[in-house]
Image (cartoon, rainbow, N blue to C red; front, side, top):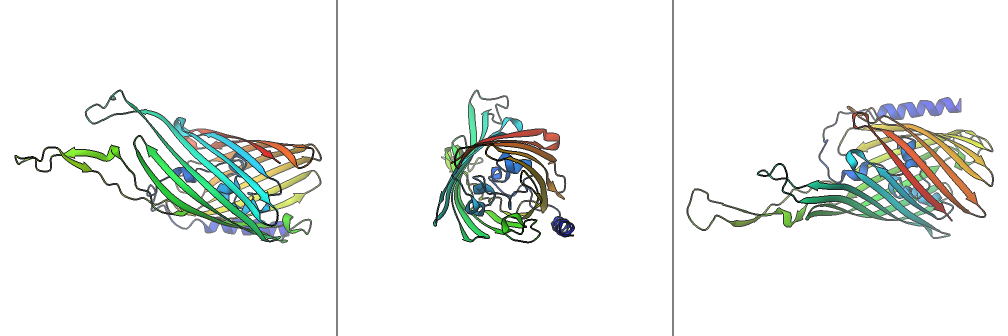
Length: 349
């Protein structure tokens, strides 16, 4: 009966997010902040806000850092659509009686593109680059054995040739472990709840020498107005504000096997509400390591969504003491845009 009750709650949560049609699509900047980073999270359809307890918590829910038991360093590479490359790297240090401190870096490289103008639409012979990055500093701590809080401060920068924009933002998160529906009676194996607010910060406005120009302000009059220097002022755009709330539960827990279900509901400022669902199976060989099999679906109930199923696999090799190496891979279907892969390697110590 407990399992059926949880499933009923998850269905209600997923149904509740379908409330309105998109009304602000294309109205925010720095969209790379909403891609999602880390194959463990991607493998479960980004339903990770209540599962995150590794370095990728810096992105998904900084409160997850407070439940880490070992220090960790992670490097992630995930090629995106149309030859765009994205990266995530992070490190977290667990400090007893103080908390967990983490630093994360997200980078996006759009590649080299040819310069074109109205008069030279086949190209001028010049090339330019565009890219984005965000640097985060996080702190998290358990306020109780079952409750953790975390926050991240991030610096965001976007560049297009000689033009750039900057912003500062704040991420806040909480994670709660409850004894509800726990098959072992322990909080850590019961219903987990996570909440995260991401990218609450300043607006971004581009500036740079590429916005300098000249214009004839009075083309119908003779005089010294032909080459008046002007500066094109751009509008300031909001960051993609994301609020996530999610739950996860492990209905099967045995010595060597564990099955976990998760669901996230998302409210964003540039689209309608949606839900992500995922499942993770973990097989443990004591003293040797763990194997993870993952599956999920992203952006349920989102109108005209191109996102589809996701799949992932992970391997953690344990060594003597609290040391290990973890490799993860994820596959994401993006409809007419094809599919993307994600790879990561992490070191635990």
